[in-house]
Image 1 (cartoon, one colour):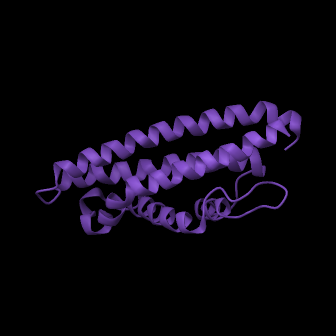
Image 2 (spheres, rainbow, N blue to C red):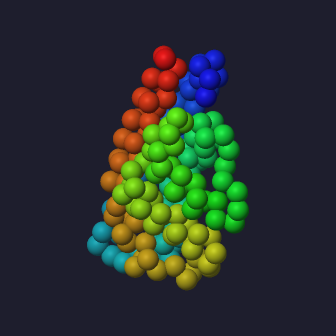
Amino acid sequence: MSTERNCAVIPRLAAEIEKELRDLGTLAQEMSDARLRFRDREPDGYDLRAISGILQDFYTGIERVFVRVEEEVNGGLPAGEDWHKQLLTDMALEIPGIRPPMVSESLAAELDEYLRFRHLARHTYGFRLSYDRMARLVERLELVFADFRAACVEFMDYLKSLSKG
């Protein structure tokens, strides 16, 4: 990115990331509230559909951040049928002369579980969902969100340092 382009793009990209982080924080709170609803009972079909929706929205919001970084910093989205997976892989890569990794490999591995669940949930009937397939994702969502938020803050600091240089 040229310095001139940095001055225009970085503040907007940072604002977009911050908005997504606020929305993801709302989803994390919704999941926390949902967990309270079924702490003493097994989630029913409606609970499962709601939980599934939150899990799908969670990864979609994260992917939205990745898409914006890929467009503005990397120069475009990956092509092909598996572009969602490739996008996640790209975010854990250092691209010399362009950017550091946006997320660690361990966070990318955690996020891959949410990506795989989203794919499953989008391609099956809601009544076929089982809590066993979601439990780990539900339990880890707040921690994964905290790690993702920290990675975004660190990445935005890097971007802001570019605009000063």
